[in-house]
Amino acid sequence: MDMESLMAQAAELQNKVAVAQDQLAKTVVKGIAQNGACIIDMTGKYDVIKLTINPGILADGVGAVESAVMAAYMDAKQKADTMIDKVMGDATAGIPMP
Image (cartoon, rainbow, N blue to C red; front, top):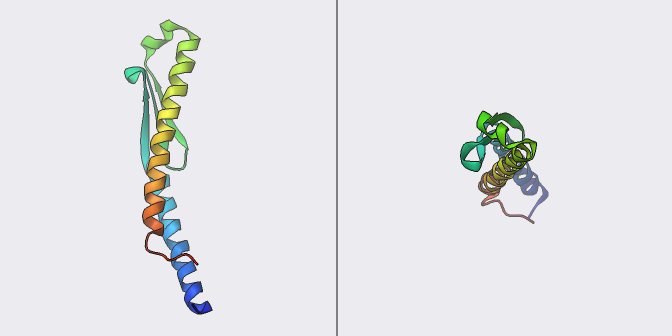
């Protein structure tokens, strides 16, 4: 493989990854805990953009709220991880790696 071809492939890969990263920044997943007591909206770049806590859970105490927030975050992160794997996999599919 010549250097010119290798550079063209690298540029193509860079462009596809940039598009994929832009897509991830604009895509939102929802992490849900305790039947909707806590919902976290997160982008595919792990930015939390919204936190919703059902006021009914407040009566259960601080520990319950903390637990619900952590569970919702972990659910959102798992969904974001899955989305990232797919989007980045699609972006790099078919590009031979030296």
